[in-house]
Length: 615
Image 1 (cartoon, helix red, strand yellow):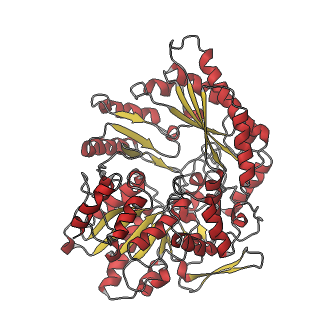
Image 2: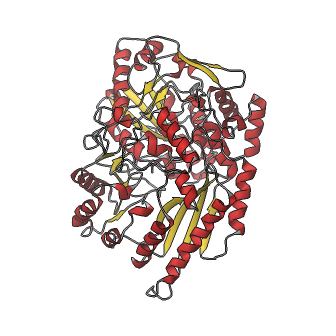
Image 3: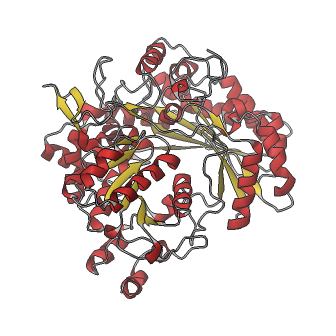
């Protein structure tokens, strides 16, 4: 029946291939042999979700279990949603076409705060109660993981289980527990209570929050002595033994990152004070050259991709990068397969690296100085100098690159207008560097793109206590950059201050924001990460109706003694370490990266945790 209904509507929507499945390497199983059905939901469109490495890993891993069937689900674009509602089609899994309301698990990956309303909308579109308290039976277990769950509180009313940390082991442990409870006819409550005792599992219904008169948190307590007072993240220490698929589902249409992706390490040693990923994924853990090479070969053979992206938070920090590139070159050159290195550090691009990347298709190179002045780079602990950036650009220009992207932030703590002007001034110095080379190819011009985002203070960073600049201040800083831009060789892009404001609200929010999200979904708010649909006015109306001032979350400086909404979550980074880093930032003082000196951040508390200095 669903097939006939879909046939009726697919010609009425953009990109119907988003909604039909059937791609190469997708997994279809015999439903009669399945014990647990898992809907892996990505709260954005197909092209974005199909680019996500975490979905590729967990989709393949779960489907290797003979009695588990994991299907993919993406947020339908509003044109498709309208047709689904008009034709009584519930949200379905791409592999089977079955409504996900009949699945055992509905799992979401939370990558971006502005996707929260999409999560609620997808549940409603599937016919699943949005509030966890309204789901009574031992099915429709709504789970969530990803970086945004390091502060799960704004979604606490809707999610049954949050997976804290890395999911390769904990997901299967929870599924195996579910099988046991299902076999023994145990209740939903009994299953959730047993699940809460698994390391890396947070069940919010078992915890109470009390508030002070000023709106800050007074206490956060477990209702039951059987559940942990702190939830410790799960982590894969040995990355060579960590599950990685031999094949990816090959998309039917072009996606955002349409290539093979090989993860080379997790974590980061740099300690940039604004960067949440750099702290929550500690400690640093590398895969071996042999493991990476084998995984790259498997992916290219099974998918037909002719480009490999070596994925990490900072690819040039891989300790044996040159040896890895030489190993890959042994077969990629013959097979006309290119290798790309995203996330290059300014101080990691050298003449030697340039020579090894000769075979790469020369698109643009991207670097992230993050701030326009040295004082500001010291505040954020970027540990990169202007001289290093200019030297790196010289290497790139001599190697044949003519297009450079530079990423910066405005609104960083202690920033002045001189720091803001320094962003476009640094871009101009890169342009000047190109024209200083007397041997440059005639007829070629340089293109420098400056991308500027607005600083969003995030949990588990030294800046988690800092306020975000108010919207009018961010817009004034954007105008300052425009007014100081002199060269036509520089293109300036920036993020809307309003979306950054909303991101800050939900990044550091508490459970009181659950009612805001629910009312927003009821009023049709969705796809907030897309300018076509984001409405700041609607959001402000929702906050007003709920009696909540969003500036309390975005623009308020936290007291160092304040209980933060995420203090019950343990990512292995001690609060005392973050406080020390915060106080150093106020003095414009830097901290060496982990390879130079251990800062005692707490990440070594994980058994087998890797530190670069013996303690």
